[in-house]
Length: 161
Image 1 (cartoon, helix red, strand yellow):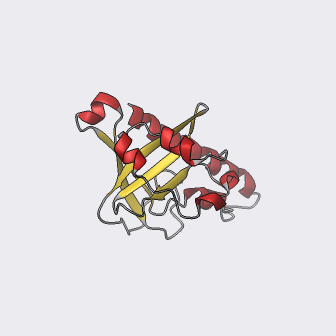
Image 2 (spheres, helix red, strand yellow):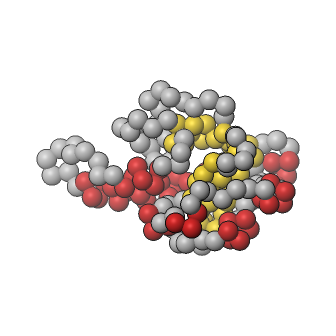
């Protein structure tokens, strides 16, 4: 992901009001984020208990969505819909996003199960275990990185509707 600044983040939201965008809190240690190791920027808002955000590029355009976190984490061995990791013992959280435009004003929303702390970019960069003799672990890791980007962009496209 290319480095982005606060102004770009605030301008990217497709399903949030001006008030919601102006009141968002940036991720902790925002200035120290290594964007080269991220496929998307996702974080929970420190001021609003159930509010979270996700931002990534879709076709060269920075696109962000405001998310609502369900009250309880899904602790069972559930697969994250974005990184599709079932081996790590991360909590998975149900996040929903109000759709953009008229559909969102009617109350339409989309939901997804995501690693609770948005650790997907880290997860997909871990080398998978050796599945069989000759298994291309680096190739499998690269494919997971590509798939993560596709999954996040597909979710945001669903928010656009």
